[in-house]
Length: 274
Image (tube, rainbow, N blue to C red):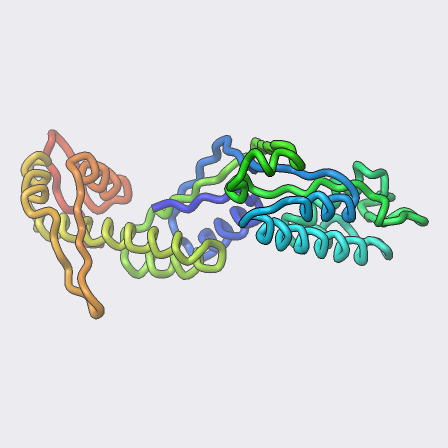
């Protein structure tokens, strides 16, 4: 029931929308990483292409396509840099632009003044040295690849933010996931959506089972474990929900925290409906 992102701008925009819509959530920050494991060919664009052309085998065609894309990115970046652009404008093109800028800086090809980046006068792009990298999965014949390419590993230690939606009401879940759809892949949104809907349904069923009586926590837990997994027909098919003993305790604690039930002396009492 959580979304994770390493993009601080996405995190800020998402939680601001959740706040503005009064949706309950929790944010955790942890250390994470980005990695690229593969191979690298160094040289001018012409030299890199010559080394790729020396390859044979099924991977050559895929590597050539990757190199063509890399070359187009460099040429696109150089066009922007002739007149000069801010870092923000350049990086808005995509994560790849940061790598191109870094490689041009290693070539001492850029002037940077007051956050504006510009290609130095008289730079001959055909003489600049680049690193073309491709993932290790493309290397079907490692011994052949390693004749022209070096092994390359990049590890970037970065913060990651986990945003957990803490809503139990179905209408609020729907609202939260409509917002999430702007910031996260459809698959992630769908997974979190059905998980939250499942939790909301279980929470509602617990409240229905309690009626207005005090019930021992162990009894309510055993009753639900007995009927799990249960099926719910939908317009297009069926939803199957299952939960463990620990999961049910967690839902009870969440219901208590937000004021829907009261737990005292190992007995649970309903205070209000969802």
